[in-house]
Image (cartoon, rainbow, N blue to C red; front, side, top):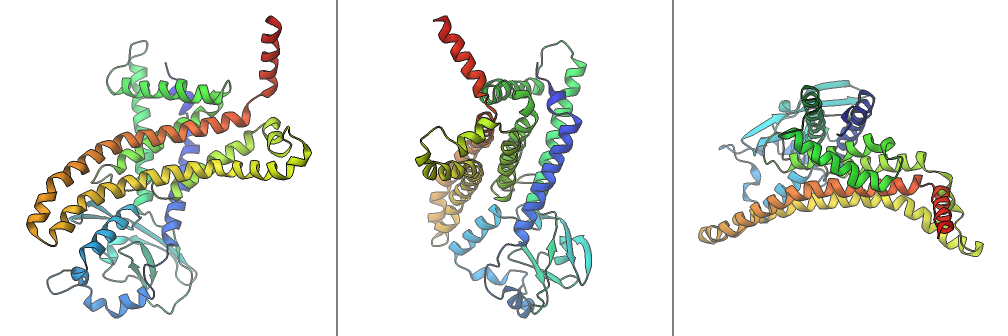
Length: 390
């Protein structure tokens, strides 16, 4: 029976909440420091504010080429935003805006005050379709510290809450059915938990696997749940959380931190004093140091690229209907069935990818940690003992 108490205890839960906060902070800061999509966008927005919406309530960009509209839609989805399109553009949920400037101090308000970027508020305005907040006055250069709860940050927080409720519910089920076989949802969670514990973490990390179970199991379930949420096209899903480079970056940095503080002397000796002729040190040591940093970098890049690519492919297939239909309506209808079929197929495939990416990230993290803490003396003793027997 899996030990949920030691894996997801109060102390480990606090660490997880801290990790969630760091992920949310880095994702919001990445959005706050994102470049504008065109030069002098704030000035153009102010000068054309009266033309932003036509008499019929349509955006002034209605005459844009269909390709540009599709590109903006896809980039808007895989990026971050200060609003949350709960059901497309029909229902838009406002999110908390938290700004700090030296001249105005701390300001907290809801993103709905910007009216979807059409109106300024308290001297600020949203540009890039709600992706960035700048000064209304383009001549002001004072730094804006943006700590807002963006769509990605909100997804991370909701995913963490879901994870906590799932394991609290499973723990209560074990308490009520003590000594009985699990069933239903409890059985599903236990099956995945035992598979990750025995098939991945224990076999990769080694005898000290229990020391790293809370970290690795939390990372697996966090990535898995957030990935699944990203495949839901409406609230509380639809956000490309692990496809935001800040989230894989923080997770990879945590693995790098654990490797650095937990690695034994044999691991560091292999990097800085490898068992090769001294003349080769000048060649091997830089390679080993580079490999030390490349491992978490590959972790980050693999998760980011695979999740982002999946979202782009799904939206790309679906957009073919409108791209072909922009020339002739019948052409759009003719590609509608295969386009929807491919979209549904990719959507089902993304459910598998959601698990695979969480699995691969945890597997490689376990291997890297196992390499760092491996007791070479213990293995050498076992090998010598086996040799004596023969």
